[in-house]
Image (cartoon, rainbow, N blue to C red; front, side):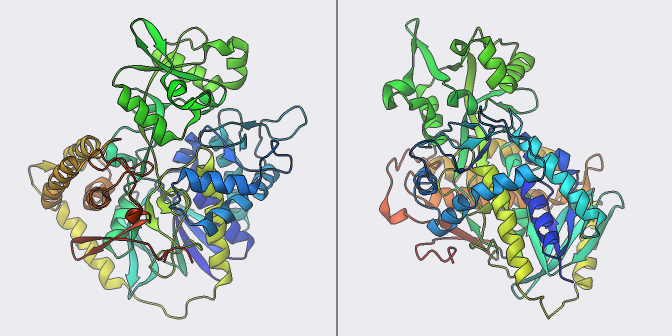
Length: 544
């Protein structure tokens, strides 16, 4: 029987595992923590789908057009078409496995308006859509576990893939509970590790998603796509631990952005873009808030307490808990924050990378969102991509050749032991914090060549000392050995942003403020013996 390893236990990883089980393929899910602690739980807004009872004028074709347009036409049309066409079946599947959607007066899933969309098509589960979907999928995983089709390995962190001659045969993990490296072999390896929030320090996402897996695979030969396209969510506020997201639902229900000038409210988005200005795509709204260069507020108080309690309970509770704001009486101070990564591992339509038998799904895979993601498309892409990868893996024949990586695994274990002997002056967490400051400062909402070049120089210095860090036994071994991969991913992202000499979607260059047709293609970046090579995918080699 064929088998697969799935690295990551969020929605995309669990979906892939369940679909593989249904097709008769065994899988091992590996993650440091249970699925209930995955970032997927934090997805609040909803999931896009054109259902059999759409809003008047809406259609799957409209969803496709909105997605392509929102992504500045960098996403592959065939991939996006498959995503949108599969959305209704995904909603039905979620209902079947126990996801409880908020319903309208007819008992059908209710729908929000989200930014960049021409019609209401975002289905939701109150303000906890991700949590509902995770709960339903966890039960499906357990059912498959009981049937012997899925097994799980917790407290284990990805170390490296087992790759030879462009083919992946498995992966090497560090088992924190045993304090040693463990090799797992499989017919296919699926990466489902999310984005790279830790590159920026505080974001709206989980710092468990730090980008190391993508960075290490990049160093091992996997190509990256569009890493420069980083989505800032326009409405967040800061807490001691992270940036808290004020869901786009608030603006979907009529929330209005404004700032104060000469004692009066200026509804700047409506003044510039008309009545639907507050629901422009996230890149546009974030840049307008940045350009305002003053404190910006989001007002939903006019909805009244009853409507807020019914439609925006999570926003109400977050603002009360963390800022002591009663949103039924006063506006919410907001600012943009890093929220989503359109770039990631480059995959073809079947979600395989340029490394044979190595797949990527969910946010760590770059395929559906182009230069900017529409709200509500991330959950859809997570579920759809997991299903697509599972179908491909289950339908292809088992690899005939096998490889022995015993020598490689032994050598990597010796490297970790040697790391423990380091007495360097460079603490690993200090370097990680410095790198996050560098990335935030030089890869923000607005960039230019000088800031990007300075960021690259700083990252090159951190990389030069990464091999001489002071081993810290007070943190997981993972934090010690993952530093170089994280820094390499940050360096690749900066390099790609420097090479794209135009402004498009979430990538805005003040020194190149206009879109340039010569850059109307995805960026593909590869790592060649320490050299970062960027090319434009004008032939769409990643759209098969």
